[in-house]
Image (cartoon, rainbow, N blue to C red; front, side, top):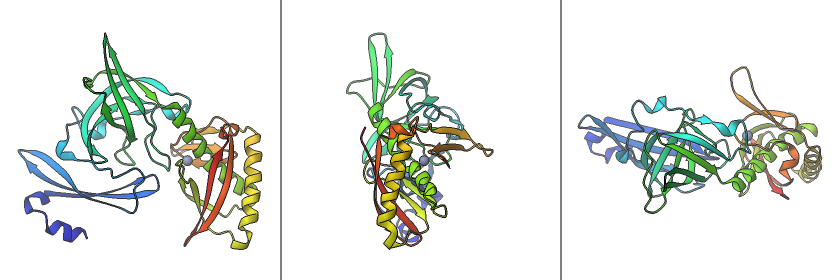
Length: 314
Ligand SMILES: [Zn+2]
């Protein structure tokens, strides 16, 4: 497909071709970037995006509209992830380190990069936070509505806040001090869903299903699930669902503290209900904060079994 696509593109533009493949939640996305050098500047445009299914609409980066983040290479940008240390922290102060434009869901949007943020970027099966970035300067206020938060790639050290300014508002400049506010209700709801997904691992282990290996988590409000490599015989599934519901209820009632630590490799490790798992998401403080959960169904595909669940209560 790529070869056919390239044949239709003028030779001059084939100076750079890059196929970006990345994950949004559980969805694998592919973006093809074609670039050319013009007046000594590399200009790139996104020519096609392939995706099996899109969670939150098409997402593409249009480098032809790119304004450099600021001086220096983008790789030098680092955003401190404050949400790692405290899920309940819903606002913080920060400094703008970069601004640029990008195309997001068919619209030209502004991207703000800051030195530290409380906003969780979409990834690891958890949806993006939303919220507001604000600067009050005398009697002037700049308000930026954050629609989506992401890392440009899995290994990026910086976080992009994508959104739009209030009508008539001035724009941020690099160096501006700002205040960042997360939509707290959404954040807590996502943390409950994510922690419930991890609690499912603990419930399985406590019931003796130790050979099931968690392979993918999808912790969105619509249809969350965890996929495990392995199988549960079809005739046992109804009974196992019943047992999982009892065990997860017990673990929630036990109010077990969620422990976040770092392993020898520097990975962030989250322990919910007794089971450790590398994770970059936001979590409840103890299992009772999940409220309640219900395991709803199991579905087998080739090598994995998908266990769907929902959080209940508040
Ligand atoms: Zn996780």
